[in-house]
Length: 125
Image (cartoon, rainbow, N blue to C red):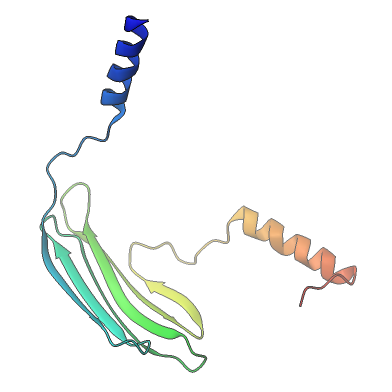
């Protein structure tokens, strides 16, 4: 019985998350005006950064424009993605994103099913 308890305790200790070399946040600026407008910017000492600003949209949402970046694993540079999210959806731009963006197979299957349901007169409103 003692062996089982000791083994269980050992497994628990080994399974605990190990925090190694925590990354310091070097910048953390945030503004929330409470009306759908906001901005934030943060940077970490390892090169990760993000910045965004939101304004009120025409349909009650926050329209957001911003970017995020992080270092390449080989240390040769950074990946940066700039984006806009508004009434027209989410649009991201980066030389690291594949273009044209391929439609995933599962999405094509869902679209096929939706077309079949529409043809059969099944609609959801």
